[in-house]
Image (cartoon, rainbow, N blue to C red):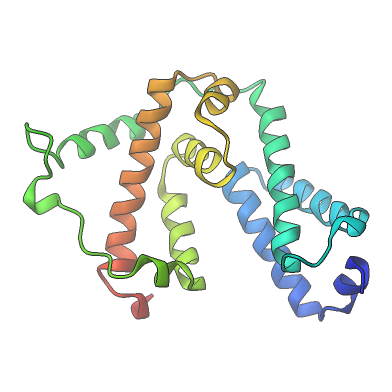
Length: 200
């Protein structure tokens, strides 16, 4: 069965759910509903056009998402040529103060700020509910912070490429990534790990 047959053979609920998940991922990264719609459509067309390259080694959804990932990277590269990300929003500088308050003068954790035991993160990451909570936490980050984090960690740009595309310095990139990880950790501890997985 080729990809077109597999796509057409899937029930409509599966395709609706996959498209919804693709749009959610694209919107999260691009912060532009119309551009997200465009890249999702391009990814779906790319999957149909590239069906001969799909050898069934990966799940269909995983394969289509890999196409979407490349479309998002292309869209970011095209758009970032005309957007300057070097100026930090005021709320991003507030994150610096919160981050600094977590540590003592000797760079060790303040006892009350030390990260909580997350239990088994590997088990939590496999649950779909975790990703819904993670997405909500990512949406709470300032737009530039979330975008740098997604480019580096999800889209797998190397640091030099992130800096080049967004016109920021390496040290600025590292600061933004620290802010993002700190913000995500605090949010996940408050809404997922501390409260317990079953409460979400």
